[in-house]
Length: 181
Image 1 (tube, rainbow, N blue to C red):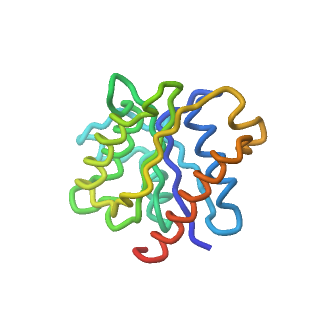
Image 2 (spheres, rainbow, N blue to C red):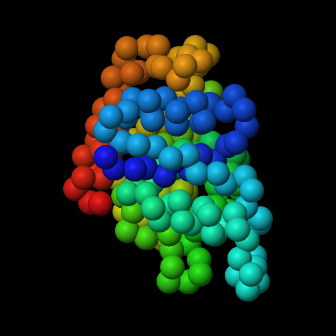
């Protein structure tokens, strides 16, 4: 079974992006094994820290490198990617020539209570993924408009149409990983 490093740009309990990531992982059970990567313990990127790299950075890089693919799940902050997520991407892309993201089949999704469901942030993130060497899945796109009760406390999608849509994403991502990984 292929493993997916799930990198979620919000660590807040109750985050709709955490909830979406867990629901997607649940829909993928039996096909893809999701490993949620901790990023909230990374210091702000500083090239000088490579002299004695922080253990949290080395751990994150090793976890990403051990995975077959990457799923970024991003909130949208001021029409862009949250600093927490960008910081993790920057650490993973260094030292120069040793990007942990390079060659990884990668997908980008996100959730927001708003109608456009992180579309602007995802466009920024997709540009960054290309620069750090991720192999980006272009379709289907998931701009998830989170509504209360759409995903329940056990991470199950309660609406059949929404579940079918997200299952289609999971199926496409699994196929993409199989073709490009």
